[in-house]
Length: 116
Image (cartoon, rainbow, N blue to C red):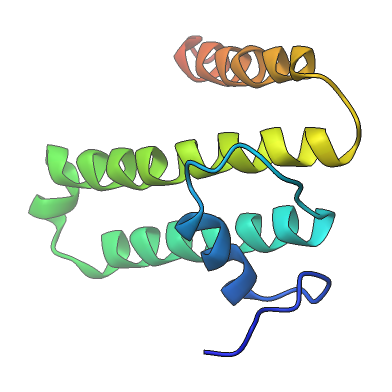
């Protein structure tokens, strides 16, 4: 396979991030971050499309929740490694990484709040 151009937006560049899931050293470009996000959105679209295409009984069971959980888990560690490399590229310290759990905490709290 040919070398992936780090300045060209593509899903292959996002897949390259998945291969280096536990590589926290080095640097990442903004294009890699955007490519990884696009790959993640394609994966979510695939799971949601599968959810809509399957029979009602399957989608109402825990199977769909498990499928989304596996997808989230599969993308979490590569995202953290990509974020650390991007922070290195911007000459920032890892103190900025505290924003990730705060963001996820706020998102989870918003999902758990009762609807008005």
